[in-house]
Amino acid sequence: MADTENPILASIKLRIGISDTIQDGLLSDLITDAQDRIMSYINQDGDVALKALPSSINWIVKDIVIKMYNRIGDEGKTSSGESDISNSWESIDLSEYANSLDQYRKSSLRRRSGMRFV
Image 1 (cartoon, rainbow, N blue to C red):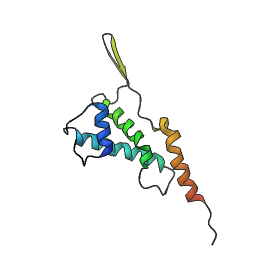
Image 2 (image 1 turned 120 degrees about the horizontal axis):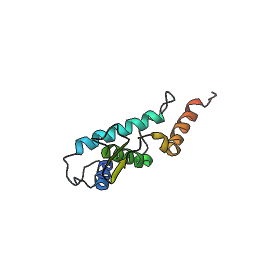
Image 3 (image 1 turned 90 degrees about the horizontal axis):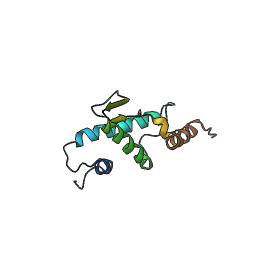
């Protein structure tokens, strides 16, 4: 892996066993999508000051990207089976990360709603 590679991309590639750069474009697109979903969740209450994802929640980005990557070719399916083997996919729902993400929504909302006297 290149030294200049995105650390999130490098970590995801390590976790899913990719050592070349053939799928970097796809993985980068999935990373962007996951980050956009998270930013939308955090900022869904309106004009929130948070403009970039805190690095402390990069684990959520990685988790979502791996789920999206593993579903490629099976989008829309909830389960599948052949012979004695069956697979099921959970939906990619940010509510499972709410405990970690809500602290950024709440802190941003507090800053916005606080009163200032001059």
